[in-house]
Image (cartoon, rainbow, N blue to C red; front, side, top):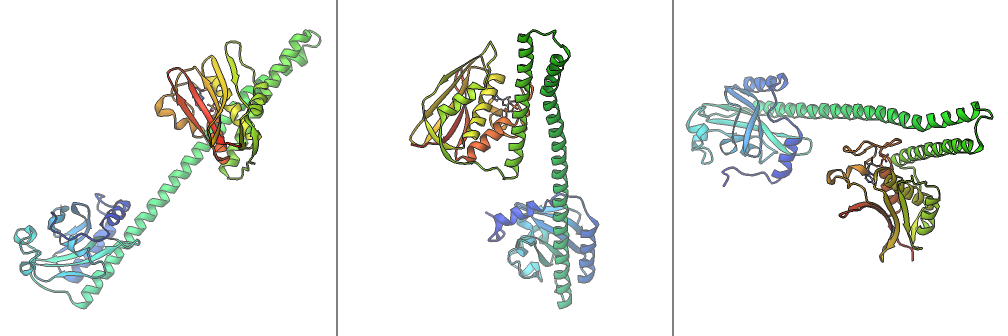
Length: 398
Ligand code: ADP
């Protein structure tokens, strides 16, 4: 059982004290100046700036004592913070039942007199005191009391200043981090655009420079490779634009009845699986509420991912229950490590374990999930013994 009274707002008071990040910091001139002034004005051998923590009081500044903390049980300040409106004065501790047996009274430093002004923060919590003590019984004059209270307010100003500075530093750090991230993104974007662009320019150069030396089949193949790469470029740019508009909250999605089977078919028409991979479609005419072009963008992303990162067998299917209509893209590739499942849905995040594919900026899943959520749905990842499943769920239209 504690032998000190607890303030009624103890929990938020402690949180406020922690938020000031003052505990266990080094001495500072500003606080030492204030304790010196308090001791001088009140004419006491001891003056402290004391913060009352959960189980202890800790001194940010001290004059006349050579320890930097005590347990809360023996702290006069633990009593002084309870009534945060007024100065707490103990004229003679030896005749005060609360303190007569206190080891600070019965042994060194043999306190007799105590006066503490609560340090009340901007959010209204008494986090500690500015206090003065003497080894003989006494009182303060009205002027001394007023001065102690004024100096306590100065301590609080220092605390507020410290917090403001901390916030400025934190904002600077975040700004710097954002600028660094922007540079990284710009570099990644430039790199990802250059890869397909180099291929487009290369193939067009070959066709242009070879005059009649290319067979019509070769010419067609070069041009269609260039067209495919240009299509890749255009998808990357689409993703970037959508990501920027999502970030600025300016992206609008429509909500109309969408036949998921028809959207999947449209996407599959434009997808070319390499010879070692198969895509199986197992769809039914399920209808959802959504934006058809965004639904296609999501399905295209999921299928492209399965082709890039997944196994050799990919299945696209539809499903539904009474509330949601779903598109599942499954593949029999390696599972995504459990610890990475959340982060792959964050923008510009790719797997730490796998080398990202070419044209990988880690935007696909982040965009897809945000688009799905804008349409009132979501995307989830599931793994059973052999299959990874990315599932787009949208409100059903029946
Ligand atoms: P990107 O494809 O540009 O890397 P995404 O956001 O689409 O970005 O995907 C993020 C990461 O998620 C990928 O880099 C990959 O590591 C992982 N991933 C996505 N789909 C699959 C999948 N079907 N199988 C395994 N890993 C996947």
